[in-house]
Image (cartoon, rainbow, N blue to C red):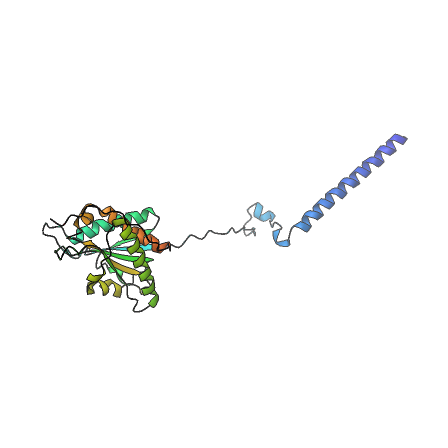
Length: 264
């Protein structure tokens, strides 16, 4: 063997040794960097689909959907009776129902599930919701020019004090937004036992915040109730959203309501 051949052979061996050392060091570094739990597990049987073969399963975290906030809207006197009736035949039941449908649609557009409920709906027995609002209107009899405006009564919380606290918060939210949207004033001096002791308060789940609203007097507030139900509905819906979103009860500037027109 020539001197050049020997030298070339030695260089080849050295090169192999260096490469072997390099790959050994790289593999060692990777093993140190990985924790035992991070090493992949697999088997030949799993790869080839052998019966009974153990396969490695990677479990990814499942996103948790946000809790569904259900809102209940009672259409006053619906499927029960007419409620108050004006001389021209306009019934409170029909006024309430138009407004209730608009409230339902508005809240649905905001992503909420909304139950439209009748006055004596069997679903109200033990009913649970994030909020429950019963929509009514006041008498069509002329009681004087000062009988204009709305009022709201909260559930009394007889079985759970937190129901009263949350219902008062719901009431205040609706009162704030409703007055701002409709321009109607709060009329606190004409409550009746039908409101303060509203029958639904005794049947729903004691944890459900609930209120009953008289949206206006069908005599002095006839125009806005009958001809502008979308304005009325938006005021109620905005109040419900105020409660659900825990918005501040900041004073709002009332928008001018449509020109008042008494019932025909």
